[in-house]
Image (tube, rainbow, N blue to C red; front, side, top):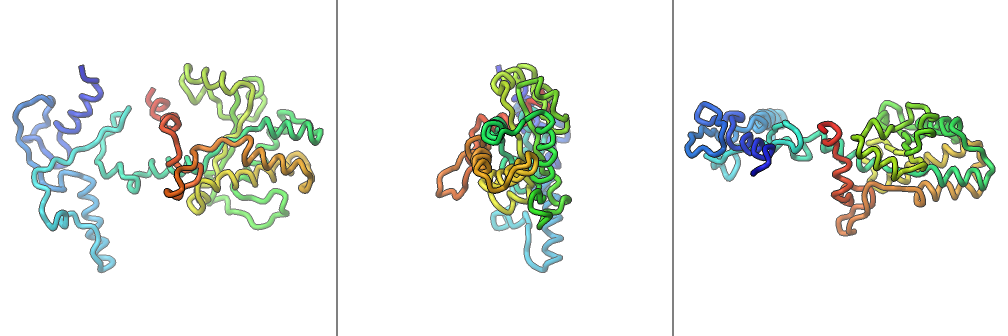
Length: 312
């Protein structure tokens, strides 16, 4: 027997009224009907294309140069009886035109692309070991909180040990932030809540237990650099931007000397040893480096998509 959700999606797609695509004046409720009457009016059966046609005409008039006009389709041949069907978004009841799922038109896809490229995960434990064993520094919940406070100032592109040199304007980089997550509830309770990603609150119980068991007592930083940076640079630039700001923040927060050897070890930890990028480098002919959506595995993509959290 067909999945009821699939059957419902197919009925919505082929047997319901959508735009001016009237099914004999009344929407059918059975996809198995043998007869029907269609009143299809070319592109106007698609509400989004109607909107686009008006916009194209306005652009043509404004710039005095031909723009979008659906009547130019196939040298002016109308679409006739071609049924322009809507789409149901998987796992939801959202129905939309196909045009809304083009990545240029879809703000959610644009944001997803940006969020993948601007994100990386960086371990804290290796850096803390370096501070304690190489420099004799004490790492406590208090110092971690102060470090995260400084880092959220610095990560958007603010000066931290450079005596207030050139900085980014906060209004242009307000989507940038760093939070930490851990499987250790005791450590999590001692970190300021503004800096914590609580795994229990973000995932269904069964997934949260698995994640916390895997993460264990280790601690990690989820770094999201400014969108405008990866739009100007590329995915590989994310870890470089992050490592620069993390290194500067460690120097400032733990009162280090900028020229000492341990700084190099902290930089290596941030850029390589403790780094988890969102995607791998894809073949060079595609001209995309690491941390680009093209190098993202399907499994990781499934984890990134929020359907199971929003509509469990």
